[in-house]
Every structure is written in C-alpha cells, then in structure tokens.
Image 1 (cartoon, rainbow, N blue to C red):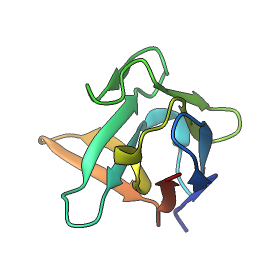
Image 2: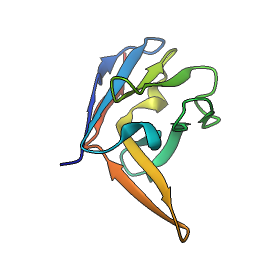
Image 3: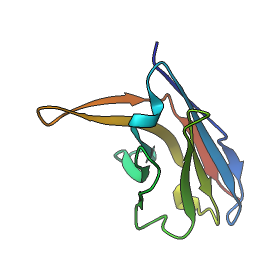
Image 4: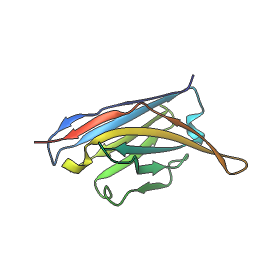
Length: 121
C-alpha cells in the first residue's frame, strides 16, 4: 500500500522556521522525483520545490528561492522541506508528491494528505 505521510507543520511567527518531512512507503522511493506543493485557501495548488530521484537537481518556485530548501534521504525514504524566514503568504496546506515518468509520455504519481503551515503573529 502506497503511503506518503507529511509531518512538521504548525503555527509559526513571521521570520520563523519549520521543517516538513514526508515519509514514503509502498513504492521504490529512490526512482521517483519528489516535490512539495502548497495550496492556500481560495487558491490553486502550486509547485514549491522539486528534487529529482538522485537528488542531484533541485528546482524552486521564485517565491521561495533563497528561503526554502528541499532535500531527500533515499535510505530513509523521506523528503524534507526546510522553510526559513517564513512569511504570512507562505500559509497553506503543504503536500508532497512522488512522480515517475513512464513510457508513452505518461506518469505515475502519488500524493500525501497534506500538513497545515500557518504563519501568523
């Protein structure tokens, strides 16, 4: 059974930090690209950061560059999102996603259930 379980969310003041974790099971974690998405109330879900399967390449949304860092530990089947200098506009539910490209320009994807991050004074 495939599972992606996020943790580490919570309430933090502006300028603070949080570290999100996403523990994966039920599939071969190391061959999947891992991403973090977020969805704020009334807004569409947006891509925050991606780490490729080997972890050698990472990409970030412009809004989080220089503040967030994605990393993965393939031995622990876990992907992390270190979030520093948090802003009120970072408030959202954060989701992790696993993606693998398949033949025929298709993909296999798995989603976690999300963890709430609230940035407020």
